[in-house]
Length: 629
Image 1 (cartoon, rainbow, N blue to C red):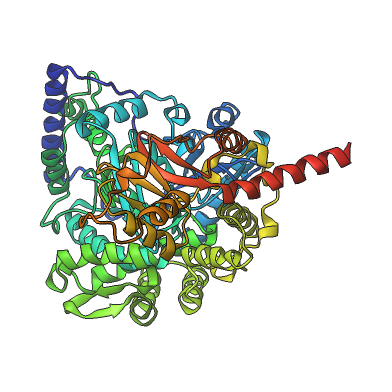
Image 2 (cartoon, rainbow, N blue to C red):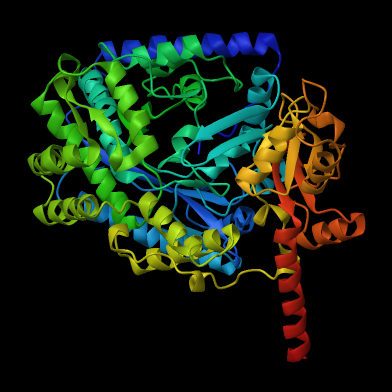
């Protein structure tokens, strides 16, 4: 969740004071390591679960305030958005039945939170990115009202100097502009923790970096975002920013290298008043909290993060794995954790120093490839050998993870249970991401709308998670599962708009527009400028009129520009416009298409074809209501 008693400060003196505290904490950390003050000889593992809440229509439900008012479990905490929650599990000694105990803790706490959420008229879903989330859900009004989040948002906005733009290419392409940190609320993860001693930190951290790619390839569960088919784990692409990163090199000797690099590269965003003097705390016999260091570390999001903590009065170090997505089921999450715990443990004894057999650049590029392609990625493993992710995992890494768990004293029943889940997943090649994509493809054949398909996927996910089966055993989602689909009168344009746009610039050739309409079966083409701002629209009718009057060989050798026939400054709507308002506007203006614009950026189009279907459904709904009366 992160520290909450923070300040949004533009006072340079306050920033300098905090930076001094930060540097003091680093010196204290180095002193504590040198003086052997850390807990050693103990290996603990832990986990944090992030969740989405969805309403009766399978859309984000911003009910965290109401839910947390009735919550009595201090482990359940808010997240960035009002439609996310998080809970933390108590750490377990690594060995014995720790994995099944983590699964039981996840199951029990999820059901406890589900009861609270059900009381607010909503439900829970575990997924890396909620398929039904829309841009209109990502307003500041849906930010959890905590000072930390407002402060982060303001600080990042100042650094960025304007809205951020994301461009992600997968099967489809997404270009989205957003002016707040709320896009981060689209992502939920299942974070795992692995405690290590200071003298072994560098070795284990580097191995965690090396195994990030196969762990990612096996756990992908976020292929759909704003209706687009993007990366198998789109969370990674969505969080690609300077402060969210994989790292730049192997760690040489100490955890302090990570903290020093992040302090050097990333400005202080948040401050806190009167952080304790860590050396004074040690003189008084107390364990220093290193509050400034932890606050800054909480604003830099490495995929494998170094963490300082205090447990039962003793300081410790741990590696926090932020790579794994939520879902597709609780047993899948624990299996993913088992793979990571086992691999890190085994490779530490198998290779010692991973730097001797793998280049850092290979580990980093492997991670991106795995996020893009999942089990279909090509991974450059030790000694430069390249193999497909599914073969590498099945033939080499799953046996190594199994051995790592067994060598660590994990109960054989746990090893067999969770490694068995992963073996089934690799054999069927049905990751959570592939299940979503295959479900979407199957429902397309039924000519379902995008909105109907996405709702069905979320509904099916919730139902199958409650059954408790691992995701590779799930049947594909069916349209009939999307019970609670809202009446058309309550839907918005973003549910129906087309986002796969073909656009032109105003100085392009009219004949090109004619060809574009013919080739892509379009009746309207939007005209945009270099900044993707809408400036006009060309209709099929206006192109036909031009061709009838002038033909394809007008005397002007340069041809006629689009600007001469386009409608400038056309009527447009926002994605959160109600469907019925869009139908009314189109009818009143007697136009065949409405561009969809958000923050001056062109994001979609709705045409008379889509809205005629909607109008028919409105009439059907009215008829059913009249018959019922």
